[in-house]
Amino acid sequence: MAKMVTLKDLLEDELKDIYSAEKQLIKALPKMVRKASSDELRDALEEHLEVTKRQAGRLERVFEELGSKAKAKTCEAMKGLIEEAEDMMSEDAEDAVLDAAIIGCAQKVEHYEIASYGTVKSWADRIGNNRAAQLLDETLQEEGDADKRLTEIAESMVNAEAQSGNGGSRGSSRSSKKSSSKRR
Ligand SMILES: [Fe+2]
Figure 1 (cartoon, rainbow, N blue to C red):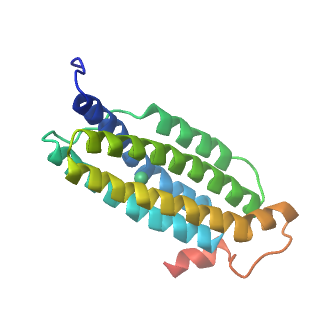
Figure 2 (figure 1 turned 120 degrees about the horizontal axis):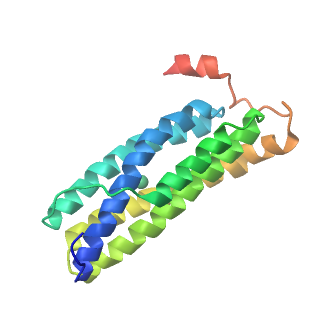
């Protein structure tokens, strides 16, 4: 690519990385939903899928604000995080243990995104594009909310169930995958 001369050039380059990250996540989340057993976790992941689709659209608006075209440049970090999640989900594990693993993987993704959005938001601020900064901040807040919700799900139920191992204390929140797929 052309030499990056200004902070705006760097911002546009980083936005391409994040745009790729969101697109990869849109493809990966449905698999995580299918592998999750806890209703709360599935709901949270499904909701985050919808939020993530909107975030990709919001990034397109940010590109517009900067006067450039939305383009993705493979985010290798997200690729790695998703590969690790897929490895983890192919392990033979108790439902609750797998749920705890999925939450861990999803939180690594959220933390990566929080770091990325925090950075591009401050760059957008610096170059004086308030609208772009505002849009990026909206997503930053959503990623933070998703992260907190995952912590709550882990700490209020999943981790305890995983701790007891084999079948142990199944909360009423946990229903079979079959019945839950009918719900939707
Ligand atoms: Fe996101």
